[in-house]
Amino acid sequence: MQYLYIIRGLPGSGKSTLAKILAEKYNFNHLEADMFFTQNGEYTFDRNKLKEAHKWCQEQVEEYLSMGHNVVVSNTFIKLREIEPYNELAKKYLAEINIIECNGQYQSIHNIPEETIKKMRENWQNAF
Image (cartoon, rainbow, N blue to C red; front, side):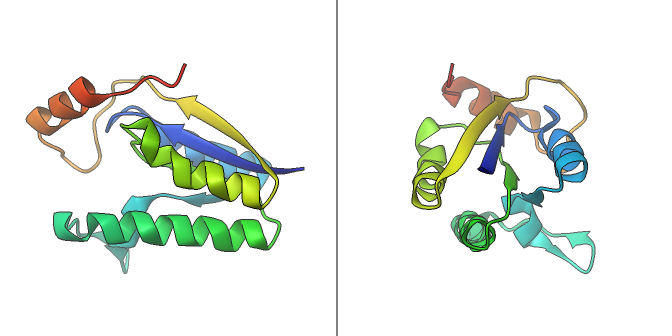
């Protein structure tokens, strides 16, 4: 059985940390849109390339699933519709999809303004 784990939550909720633990413990491939903005170990966010980053993440997930690998994806996924492309990939490759919501309140490593996080919290759609 092949697996696709989706980890969602607000910035600073522990998504990346949990994804890294799962990837290491179960030998999953860990992906997130933020990886698109990391070059030579340096993170440079560009809001204008956010759609491109999510498209890249989905393409990477499909590549790994097509090779029979397990994948864990950690993104905010504020709206449930943002998970739909991953549901489609799971169906296409007969992977079991699991969704985990992180609710921790840690320091965001990307220094996202509190006003932005507040807006995300207001727009949050519960999956469960």
